[in-house]
Image (cartoon, rainbow, N blue to C red; front, top):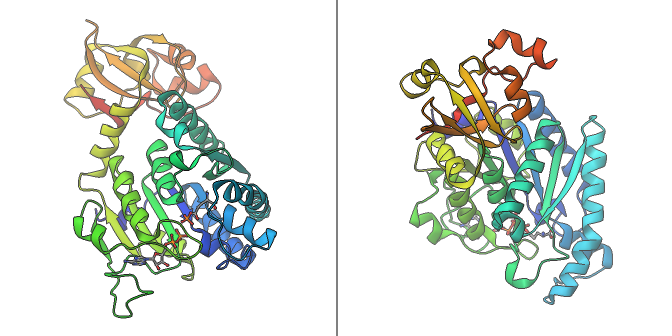
Length: 373
Ligand SMILES: Nc1ncnc2c1ncn2[C@@H]1O[C@H](COP(=O)(O)OP(=O)(O)O)[C@@H](O)[C@H]1O
Ligand SMILES: N[C@@H](CCC(=O)OP(=O)(O)O)C(=O)O
């Protein structure tokens, strides 16, 4: 399946919208553009895509509200502007989504939140819970508390780390250019659009230049973000947010913008990411039939094959799957928390609803979320 076709499947997208787009090149929040993106995001959700939004623009909108014409250099001024502008950003997103009956949530993150293991897991769990609740998280950097040394600065990197945390299928970076060009089109009118490349390709790093007056990082940070996102198997698209119906058309598989793909098969990358970044919070002991189904049949783990559950894990957390001798045969993300898992273990799938009072997934651990030992 090509990267473009993958976009046309149900899945999870992290959509990042840059400052220059959101603030209409610094003239204030572009309410019309924002409501058009929201309409498209709502359509995607209806088509089964789970959406997390990364919204820049706090500093640019703060500057606009404070009447500042040039971006200050002092961190404390940037932080003050961000604090002012963030109010406008979240108000606008919330009002637009609410017209469609969709709840939003403000999530402000720092570098520490995503590099410290415990906080990373907390942030991941909050984001995943919001997704499950059908709420659109509107993520930005927590500009008012970060110091210059630990700032992301640009939201491309933040978008990629959020894509890792929620194991997204796609990172969509909407910006003011049609995609990545062979040179900065602001400087070189002959620059050509690159339709597709490997995220790891050294050459695309070389052609990416820095940003405009309002944005931070330019294409350099977008290309780096694509490499980061590829670690957990996400494809990245850099496309113009000004293109009519850009999100709907990408979902329809249209070749818009620049597609940057992981070198490894996305599922393998994603599984490796899960295995390397999450700690097991419990164990699930399974019978010989389940061991065979998992190891030689490439199947998911159903509650029927489970003999014992230990630990106190929540839905979405990692568990170790053990055989009857206590050997680890796999690790994977549990679809049910420990208590529910204990209730349904040993029971056929059709009994889940009557035992728990609701029906979640058929599997206790889906094979896509499982890495064999
Ligand atoms: N090779 C390139 N292709 C396209 N744009 C480039 C390239 N190199 C540098 N740029 C610049 O990157 C800018 C987009 O980045 P940026 O200003 O940070 O926007 P955003 O706020 O969307 O992150 C473009 O306006 C463009 O001038
Ligand atoms: N957190 C900052 C984002 C900085 C920024 O401009 O990022 P970007 O537009 O992604 O280059 C803000 O909201 O202003």
